[in-house]
Length: 135
Image (cartoon, rainbow, N blue to C red; front, top):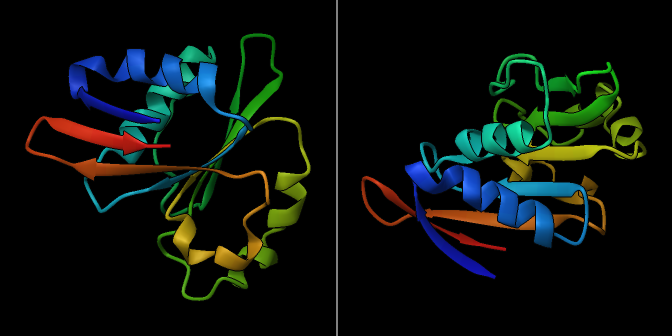
């Protein structure tokens, strides 16, 4: 599936992604500034997450809960990893065993550990306002 959108359409794109992805494990690829975090924020809003969503660049993972306190998603940012084995040090495999959404930024840093059911979402910058997504 290919989607071309502008930032003011990101909520609709998030809704379409949630309707069409085959799994809850989503890997977001794209250069710095492509809109990975912006899209994940929109996905979290559609999932009615009550927590503030931001990129967990320094903490590596954020947990997002719904209104009644149930866990809805994990949001990873692997940008700062120097070696993919560092992901095992914080228990990555345990996170993958939960039935919640998994949003991963910079998944190319952990290629050996991506689950088989991962849905790849590639974001390309077309110009200052438009992006292209390949799922």
